[in-house]
Image 1: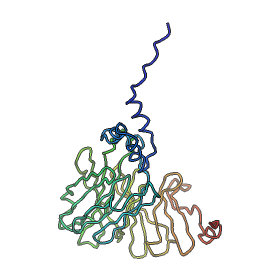
Image 2: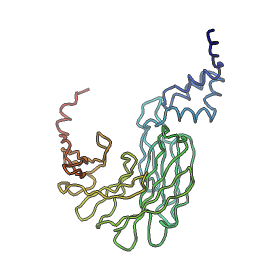
Image 3: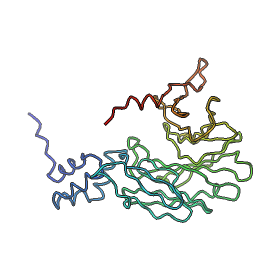
Image 4: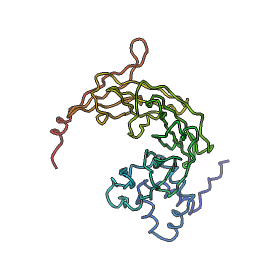
Length: 307
């Protein structure tokens, strides 16, 4: 006997599944809500909006913030009708606060004053979380100088509201030669144990972090030497990797980037020339810096077709 035919979902469930597959552009749901009251009711449902974010995973790149002493204006990178009005992503800053990181649709604010105030802001969902900084880092001996935020991949079984925050602190009195780090998980609502690492006369730049694999990376500089500080989120360990001596002074010419294989790399720009370096094992199996390729920006400019 043939099995009975599968029952079809009702019209409203089927409509939800169709709307769920709209492109994750800022204009998609607002435009769908204008079709009729029924569609407006479905897309305005908070449960549907959470499913929409979970279904699409990583949000599209909407624009960027500029940190300029007390205000952090937002600049949209999209054309109409997806251009985000600046006022939509404007958040009144607490006195002395600054943006230290943006990733996966989240913005991390850290105050410059003690006690340190931390805020994780989701401008799309219009949600804000205030975190209490770990007292071991926010004290007379140490000061918090940088941080990073991420939203773990949904493929790991995490909820879209789940996030992690990493904080970095330096000692106040020993020429900043020791760095401290810890990790916050919104799932547990607690900070991890403090990890620390002795530095060789390096101080950190205030550049934001770069996510390489499952590690946050920051550029360190000092005495014409450069290094990358890596905080492994799985092991919660700190390591420092010095850059090759060929790198010229000037941390504004350096940017950490993931290599094609997902490993650690950086680009060094000198005038109109760029060099991309990556870490690879040598004949003894030890990781060393290898010049991957050189880029001539003047050549790229001449090859760009005129409009």
